Length: 444
Image 1 (cartoon, rainbow, N blue to C red):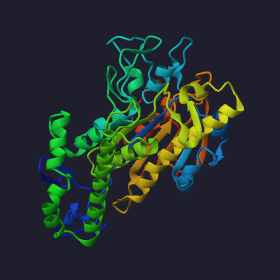
Image 2: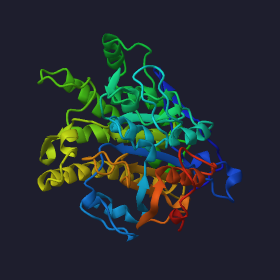
Image 3: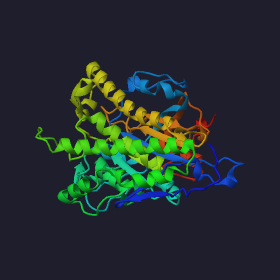
Image 4: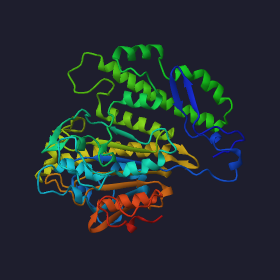
């Protein structure tokens, strides 16, 4: 980091044509009087949920150095930051009646038991991300960002008397307030960078014609602004603006394609037709939100429970939910493993992006903690014990990577959440159904 004699506010915005664009962290934002010390980097948290478990025969591994198996292969380059934790039980998802899917998804980040109801009297518990967001929201415009690539129009009763609220999200601000997740990249972009108050399609089209690009209306400001920046800041700002422009271009391209005569698809305009393009566009928008410090907390439902999405692009035409009931059939388990690998590949895309994005004296990954996993292990029998759990922890959290850990029998998954809160400097006596922390997670 280069400390300059001028100081730009961390909240500096570029404004024009009704749009406001937050800036990434620049060296010029460190005041001159801080030249003798390094600015403290912020800490960030993200959680990505994949429903319906894993091929546990392939996922599971013994305690010791991390084994990069066929499912974890995309994380090979970041293995020094990866920890797999086995033996954790999502106890509040255990049930003798039906409804294991909504219970598994809702308990994963809350450690609480979903109240069985299909009415408005839903109840769960505050989720881990929202406890962190309550603290970080003091410094950011958005407390948190909730994204998904699944349908968000589920309503009423979704499974065996459980409200669809339990299937629609993993983020709960309070025990009775689930946070809606956004699946349209255009809406995410407009939330981050501004748009008209009108959602009318014709009005939006007029706005796009008047503003061919959000950045085009800011060119003059950027030109004047960059003249006062050092070489490093000019390069960093240029790379950031290129990323914003690329995200907008891909959204506009998807919307143009949506207006063409295509086979009927249950997808709204603005969503790319190719699944991997869709996921990566959403992840790029998430990265921009973190890079601009608009938020430091996010949740991402990559696969909701009972999802029927198929993956013919990787040779798996089966719907995911039926495939997850594999009955220990070798061929079905092999296809399920390919799906698991494909999902980890999307997660690794975000990890690599964070690692490649400068942040202070290191990268954004250094100050980011990512939780990846599912609320059940063996999906064939809806088993919520020994749930697949993976952590990518930046260097600033004091958690050694390249490890496979095995928790003692009957250890609540919430013990991990409690430990992560402590690593964020938010110690609590209890979280969900926790009964203590995980001392094994410590180490550098």
